[in-house]
Length: 383
Image 1 (tube, helix red, strand yellow):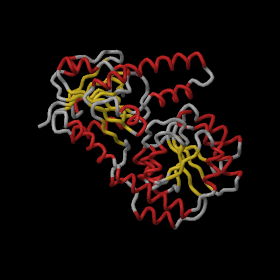
Image 2 (tube, rainbow, N blue to C red):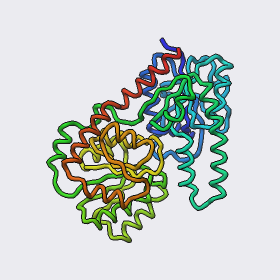
Image 3 (tube, rainbow, N blue to C red):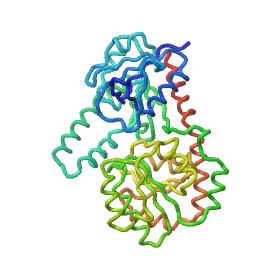
Image 4 (cartoon, rainbow, N blue to C red):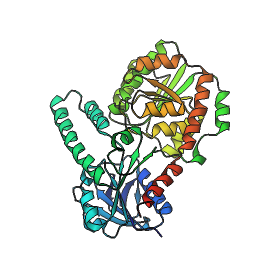
């Protein structure tokens, strides 16, 4: 049997009289850790109050692990790591960058998982703090200071698991051992099939475009209505369905009405991924539109491709290599919704369907369970 694996995620839980409110995706991943790791599991997680949009109440006594809930500002120490063989920590969380010293103190192997590189963090800050130059300057200064700490921590760790191409490129030379993986939520059995694509190939009528995710500036949500307006002005027959919620939802809804787009653009709000969004993407869409303005390793690229949809994305450091490797979509200039509309207006159904097949093949080569097992095997080499 393998040794004790300790998880110290960046996500928090909300404690209440009815139990623990836990992020659904994390809860699913926790159960998979318990199933795939050949040994005991300990979860060290922080309590918080920030709402968790996609979450459920769980009984702490039914969790498949030893549970340590600590305060939001608590310092993870020897008590939390004692007895472990391997710790999988979150390098994106600045509160965990001291862990190499703790791991050395208790003689534990430390592996960091990381998603964002510095350039992506700075991109996000510029988008979130646009129009507030003093706050932006302070935020960038803080990020630069934390990056120095982060690189020192990664250099001292036994290994890293980099989610996506930007993080892998930024940190693979820093760490002693690097695994690169692509994160998503789809297993092979939930992906589209050849029959799905065949049915789509017989479809006629308007090009059905879907966009899904958080309606925030970093995801390019502000480009959705300008994109639809430009596509309409070009005379393209299409329908755009938007799934998601966020601070830009009300302005998007207002812009849809103001520009009389209600017949061809629908804002549906957030829906459950597995039960609702996946069937919609597989059965009611032709193309996925992802106008992301930063380079985070968004899992929606791979998930859309797993539904057999080609992706039109922006020239960001995550999507460009994924698009080139998969040949499952197209690349447009970031922040140019009019240019995106022009490019999509020139696509024909034959080329869209061909890209659908290539996108699906790439997703099947990077299914969730396969990627997860690679990560577990990587952790196992440190035993």
